[in-house]
Image 1 (tube, rainbow, N blue to C red):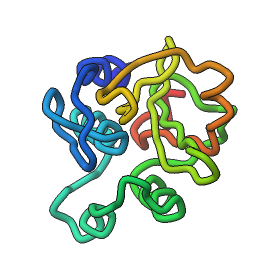
Image 2: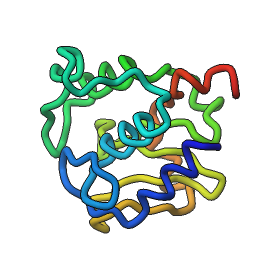
Image 3: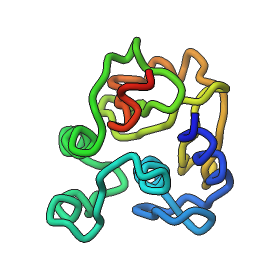
Image 4: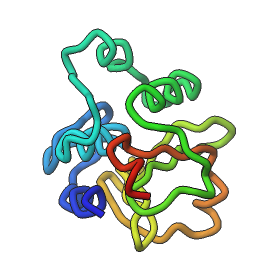
Length: 143
């Protein structure tokens, strides 16, 4: 899947809140956005009013607002239908506020606790955090 190939080129990119630049800095949303933009699979224009509406968020973003932003550029799918290249929305504590890309090995995400983009297994602890799933619109016909 092209999304995973592209996401793997971001591995090791340092974590930085609101970052979205491969090899320089990104957060979890920046990774998903950056991969989608690099592949041209999301219609995202950073200068658009729509993008600016969601551009400013805290380190602990509002989960409802994050859900709205995800649904603006991605397509909600059933969690059970999520496959390689899809995006998982995950909870930290009670509220979902983190995203990761599904890979054939687990997930890739920008993880503040380790300070960079990483790939690791999607074990039971991580699976319990999944609350929703999304797909890049261009991949709807390729599932």
